Image (cartoon, rainbow, N blue to C red; front, side, top):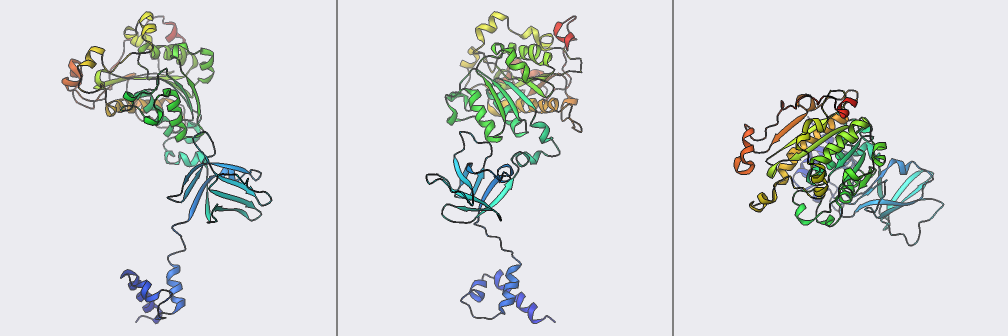
Length: 425
């Protein structure tokens, strides 16, 4: 037999389920159930308040007892959340202020909330006197916490990617590496972002007219505000070596994503190999029906780029003439006959994904406990097929037996005898 208390608890539960709880047991209702039992019943739901303001604040700021001043970041009044960004830059406005009990906030401060630090800890409220819960976080650890166990976040922050060409391929790789935790970048490209780039690029209308390196820099900082980024608005062949070589080493990788093979040859043979860095080049073939990824890394006896693909590299005169414009999606004559712009984003991105997986394997080849994802199963040259339909890829599409094919056994001839580059690797 149920006790009186059990019966009353059951009555409360049923009235709540039936939508009658407020009418039967609200403040204006008759006292049909013992008040203490109502309190006991309600306590089981906790005291969480859905509409609390929350300020996410980095530990580094909260732990600095001397810090007083502005906080920068993002204010979301519609969802009642504030996000303080420790690495302030031009993207983040003033949204808050930290003060101590014995100091004051500037009268002209344009802020959303105030954190007051006193002997009993930090208290926080909005400028219209609403309580704000402080939710501390470690900016870098929290940012890449979902990569834990797959990529060592602390080590990835010290890896550097030198991206040569920030178009469709380069911008995609840059975004993926930033999300994977790479903390240092060098971006090299001469072009600006124009309207026709948007359908394939990682940037959009808000970056029109900007140099691609500046646009991509902003996108990386939007993922990791503490990323270290160096930009060059010159072809890689014209960037002074003494500006690049000090940035390179075993924790860095050069990525050829430009629109001519000579930039990849130069990056591999004149920069990566002498510096002991790894190298990956990715490019798309006509209309991006397929593409290729080629890499070099030390310790495998691999041929340098010139030994492997030198026959396809333009002559010095052609390179100088075409440094600023070579379209590898299609020839000018071919492009005029196409009913769509050569190389759609989904095809370019598939090739770029394979390249990024190889890049991550090479960046972590010396990381203890790291398990390579793909490089153990791929040769130095990998071909990636989007479609083997001749109407898109022409006769060359016939080399693939099926769409979405990724080759594993394409190989180069042996290294050129007495190559000064290979012999020095």
